[in-house]
Image (cartoon, rainbow, N blue to C red):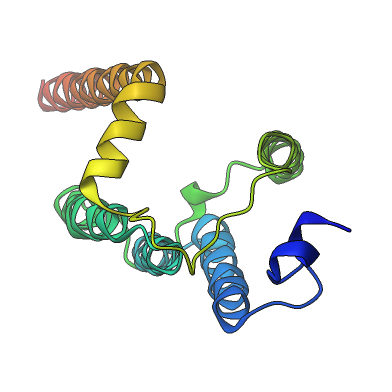
Length: 193
């Protein structure tokens, strides 16, 4: 007799309503993410990114992680995407189709994406294959106290590594943008002479 049968819990072949909604929202989020990276219109890509990040927030709500869901909405949807849209508007990015958005390496990028997705699914499935999240229990899973304890007890090193990675990306973006403005300025000065 299995653990799921002994406790009367739902199994893989008998999903609950929450699990069905989770799957449907996950499919919509996946579709929005695919459209985000395949569209040639930068503004449309940013708007589809809003849909994908919003879908992730809904997934967090379905997993009873309300705090993480609101952080997702406030930080990613509310700040990062707005910053991205302002960046597109201020840098004179093309509104329509952009031929520069296609590097010609679609098959290589697709191969890398499929390999990364397969590795991620394998690692997550292997790590959590014996874990069952009971959404009907009384444990306050999505509270700030529980999230903070888990984050700062078990995930402090990856959290800090991610912050260093984001700082390096920010510094790299500043260096690349300054180099381009210097080249533009020197090109304009040479044309005026």
